[in-house]
Image (tube, rainbow, N blue to C red; front, side):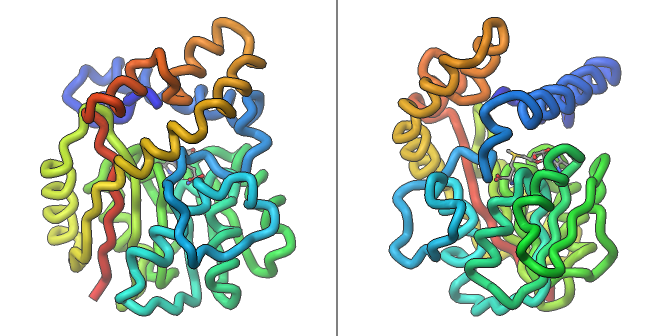
Length: 277
Ligand SMILES: C[S@@+](CC[C@H](N)C(=O)[O-])C[C@H]1O[C@@H](n2cnc3c(N)ncnc32)[C@H](O)[C@@H]1O
């Protein structure tokens, strides 16, 4: 995906940042309404290999690498914290696949999803219609659309980089109960793991969180991308020009600067876990 987010949080002039923000919102709206993404349960690039202890969830079998990203955050990386969440929120929940997976792992937990895109929160609500008590809220701006201390597990895949990591952790800490877990993943083009981890550690301190772990997951996201190239190429072949040109970048396909950065080691995808004392 093109890295608009870094420019949005940079010192670029306000009109440039506002224009990029508007473009970013419009791009997601178009993708969720008109692109092949509208038929999917996830909008993350995935993680491979799959873990042997993944739960099987009806409806997610075709997107197991994307489900694995949630397995990583909701189970693998937090196993030693012995989680038994009662209320889980997925920030930037997209089409709801992550929450369906969370339901498979923790069937008794109440689920909530928020996303700044209203089209996709409606889609997620439809996908979780059979899960009693799940709630969805369109969350505009950089505020998580739920009250203080509402959850004991705050998960987010791909959205924290849009908030900015420091702003995201402040919000995640606000909605997290004492004793709760915050697990997040994301990625940056031309990324630097040492700088990302340092920002997360600083932000944890400011927000009163305990830093638990930081993991470079780039080899795994690149493995998932390479495995998915034939499917992405086939879907892109059905997208009309000029959208296909932009689609190649969003899909990180060979021929895009995004793919080259993966191949040359300039991409930094990460997962991090924090707890609220
Ligand atoms: C890369 S997609 C990931 C979707 C989903 N987490 C998944 O893994 O399938 C990022 C999502 O974050 C949402 N998003 C971006 N900025 C946000 C914000 N400030 N508040 C809530 N959602 C946001 C986007 O609308 C999009 O649905």
